[in-house]
Length: 267
Image 1 (cartoon, rainbow, N blue to C red):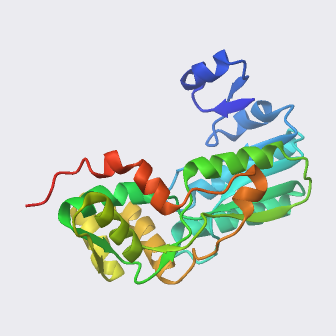
Image 2 (cartoon, helix red, strand yellow):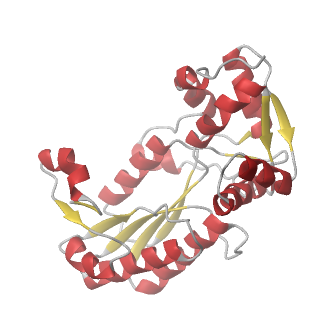
């Protein structure tokens, strides 16, 4: 069974025999019926970071509805967690994990490291300009692909484990952004320098490029967390859950080289 705000968008899934139901986290009344009959539920964190507090309220509504519907176990796609509101994304996940713990349900929190796909967004411009500008200092992350996260979530959902647990979903090694710049240069056949800047300068550059201020705040807070070593945890969780080792950053970037190198050469 799958749920979505717009069932028409999952018409191809429905054709494969999957029951598709409408569920809108901003409409809590729609949720108990949507979750009815489920024993285990995968709660994918939403992308509602447009203003503080919205996402955590959505997640709390989903957890309450799952309990009302008789769901026994929730698998949640989490992130590194801190109550500090300066780390905007982390605070949402911290609150959601607290809500899971207080729900009385069994749960599995899959704390994703930073997505390798974020690098694919950063690097075309870096390759074009020859400069990877970041506020991460000498920090980095155990970057993990979304594909590995999805396989881990599917395995956790299908598991018969009924204990409440937290798993760190990470790539095979910590890679710094300085190392990422070097990898990008090797792929492109031209020099890409790593340029560390202060958080305020990075935010100003993002806003000047047209990014809304609240989204710039989210991204800058992630850079700061990298500088502080928040994402340096490598684990065997992906392999333990799926039976397959996670994809490395060099392998991921090589697989996306056609997109990364689509940027014109800076002159």
